[in-house]
Length: 320
Image (tube, rainbow, N blue to C red; front, top):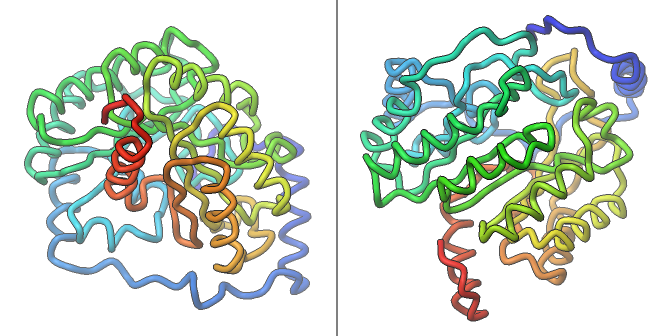
């Protein structure tokens, strides 16, 4: 990992502790249900060439997603705008940390052209954190949404946005561009924020999701497990998200991208993910995607279909 800024002392202490636990055998080897195929396939190769040729970034590659082969061979991808250097130093993330100097006014059009060429039914747009920009990059999100609408009007658009440091004007830039789904990941339980998301605030993320919902957005969030949380804490987070009227939630296993990141505290059994899904649906989420290999954008197009069915069945006037 390329870190220009050092990790916090809290992160270092936590990682050292977890690394020691792993080396003494307290955390077992990666179980069979987490093994994935090496990325291959003609569609995978085609999309990789297209992304590279357009000088675009995907979170699929930058975050080392285990589902990259499956998703790309299905013709889906998550585009990462605003460069590949993040201003934050989250303990779980494989994206480079540093001081970004990159800005490209032509990026929204190139993303839209790629969405059209790939004939996507559901496109996901995310970004690094760009805290040095006055609006956090929200205007680029908005322009990307508009360009996709213009070039691929039949494509649903999901955005996975940062917290914009709590700037609600930045949030409104995105909301007014009218994405079909607005996603902001809560990532972990409040107790672990100083380690996992040291530059973020749990309450601030909840407020962003709640405000987006009040503006008519279909909202979504996600949490990783295996960072040191308890099952009870996961359920508390789900309750908080439901209290903020979040529609869709994803729950997946955290996997350590490099030795410089937080080691895995535990490998959660598939039965526990089923339990989380059952509890989440009972709380009232319209869609719960829960499983070891689930990531924020995993089966995103199917989640969108699920929300649409849920709203129809419950006579909800919201439209995707």
